[in-house]
Image (tube, rainbow, N blue to C red; front, side, top):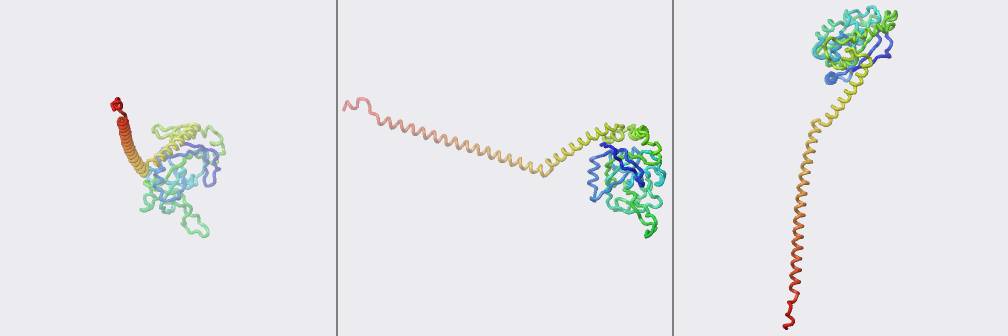
Length: 326
C-alpha cells in the first residue's frame, strides 16, 4: 500500500542519492512467513535492487519461490544501485538518474563472514557463487570489503560489511517494507538536471510507474507500478490500510472466540446449560404433581367435612306430629 515522499535527507559522500518517493508495501503471507522463519530477535535493514519486473515480483510475493537463485541485500543503497547496473563503485555520478530500490527487514540467521575479494561490490554472478558455496548449517553470508591498509592494519583484513547474500530457499528471511524511488545527486543534477526541470522528473517517474502490458497484481502493486497518480496512490493506500486493519481485527476476534480451547469450553457450557434446563423442567413437573396431589387431598377433606355436617343436622331434627301423639 502506497505512501509519499518529501523531506528527504541530503545526499552523503557515501551514498549520492536523494529520496524522491517512499511507498510502504505489505503482504500478510510474506510477513507471517518471515515471523515464522525468524530465529533471532535482531534484524537488519538492508537495500535490494533489480529490474522493474523483479522488484514488482518482490513487492507482490517477497523473495519467495526460488527467484532469483540468490538474494543480495546491501548496507549502502548506492552499492545496491551499482550492483544492479553492473557498474563499478567508483564510477562518476552523473546526477539526475532515477533508481528504484526496496528497503527490507532481514533476519539473516547463522551468518558466515566472507571477504569481497577483487570484486568490492558483488554483482549478480558473484552473489550466486557465494550462495552456492555457502556451507551447510549457514543461512547467509556477510560479504565485507577489505580494510584499507594503515597503521596496525594487516593486509587483507576484513572491513565493514558490504552486503548479505542468502540462498533462494532462505528468501523467507527477508521482509520487503518500502519501495523507494531515488535520484542521483551528482553534478548533472545541479547543472539543470531533474531538480531544474519538473517535467523531466515527472517523465522519469511516469516511465518507472508505467503499467506493464500484462499482469494483474494487487492494489498495492498497482499503486507503485500501475500508473496511479500521487493523490490516487494516497487514497488507495489509506483505503488498503483500513481494509488491512479491519481484516486483522476480524481475524483476531475470530481466533480469540473460536480457538480450540474456547470451543471446548463453549461446548461444555452449552452441555451444562442443557442439563440444568432439563433438571429445572423436571423439578417444575414434580412441583406441579405435588401441588395437584395436595389440592386433591384438600378437596377430599372439604367434601368429607361437608357430608359430615349434613348428617349431623339431619339426626338433630324431629319428625312432624311425633310430639302430639305422645
